Length: 135
Image 1 (cartoon, rainbow, N blue to C red):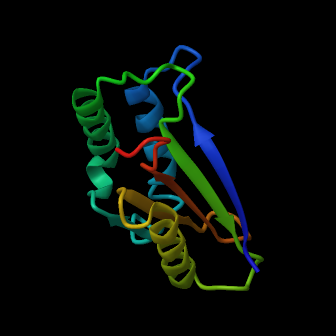
Image 2 (cartoon, one colour):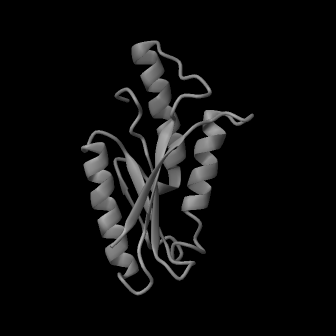
């Protein structure tokens, strides 16, 4: 049985939105954690440029709505999903994480799923571009 934790990501604390997205993408896509990048899957974006694509989406949102996000606004959601050691293969975990992200975003937002194998327990991490308002 997996445990799932959903966390809202904010820029704040001297970090721009671009830096916050770059930092989380860099951590998530770490080749030492994702079997050299083999355990990364994506929807509506390329993993190599997801942070820039998410940022472009935010700029588009601003131009369409005129609503500029404040430092305290949610810029993305980071979902962590952990499995008991030996419960699942990394590939199965990635597939389950992808399915969860697809349900969470209802197919309306880009996301990446990175499965980490650097601990005894396999876990997925993903930032989803599901903003409070439609992006």
